Image (cartoon, rainbow, N blue to C red; front, top):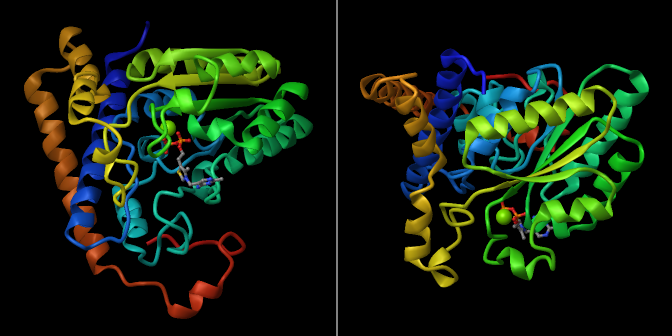
Length: 327
Ligand SMILES: Cc1ncc(C[n+]2csc(CCOP(=O)(O)OP(=O)(O)O)c2C)c(N)n1
Ligand SMILES: [Mg+2]
C-alpha cells in the first residue's frame, strides 16, 4: 500500500507510546499507586490502524475500555491518561468520576461509555442518525469486544444502522476471550463477521495484528460510510496478551504456553519488523523512540503524582453537563 514513511513511523510511535504507557500502568497498580487497570496490550494495531483512517477531531468515536492506543492516536496525552488512572483533578474522561479507561475526550468527539458493555454501540448509531439528518459528512467509529456482540444492545445498534444506512463502522476487537470465556462458548458462528449477513450489512474479518492492513480496511469502510453507502462491521482478530484486568488471574483458565505462543504475533513487534524490512527506520532510531516514550511517561507519572485530587463536592456534579477543566 502507498503509505509514506512518515505515516508508518507515526503509526508505530502511537503503538509504542500506548504500549509503554499501558505497561507502566501495570507497574503503578502493583506498586499500589492506582486502584485498577484494564489493558489494551496486544490490541494496538487494530486501534491505531482505525484511528489513522478517521478525520481526527471531525468524526465521532464511541470507544471501549481497551482503546488506549486509539485514544492516544486521537490525541489523548500520557499526562491526561495518568490523571484518570490516579483519579486526579483534570481527568478529561470524567473529572475522575468514572472507572479509568472509560475514555472520553471532548476535543476529538470521543464520547464516554457506560459500564454495561455494548451500550456505546447504541450511542454510535444515534450519533450516526444525527449526522445523516444534519448532512454533516462525518462518520462514527464504535469499538467493542467479541463477547459484547452477545449483548442485545449490539444487535439493536447494528440493526438500526443497517436499516437507515448510517455512517457507522463497528470495530469488534476479537481478542479470543470475554474475561475467561472463549468465542466458541459465546457464539455458534465461526466468526463475528458472519453475524453481519443476518443484519444486512457487510461484515469482514481481518488480521488485527497488522496495523497497515487494518488502516487500509478502515479507509475503505469510512469511505463507504461517508459517501452514504452505510455501515460496515469489521472484526479484527488478535489476542489479549494480559489478564482481563489488574484483578483477574488468567492462570485459572488459560495455559502459559498459549500466551507465550501468541507473543510471537505481538503487533508492536510485527510493526517494528515491517519498518526495518522496508528501511523506514533503523534499529537505532526505533530504540531512540522507545527511550523517548519512557521519558514522556515518567514525566507524566511525576505530573500525576503531584496533581491534586478533585474537591470532594465535585463527586456530586454531573459528568457531562459541565465543561471538564483540563489539567
Ligand atoms: C452488560 C454487561 N455484562 C457484563 C459485564 C462485565 N464485563 C465487563 S468486561 C466483560 C468482558 C467483555 O468481553 P469482550 O466483549 O470480549 O471484551 P474484552 O474485555 O475481551 O476486550 C464483562 C463480561 C459488563 N460490563 N456489562
Ligand atoms: Mg474479548
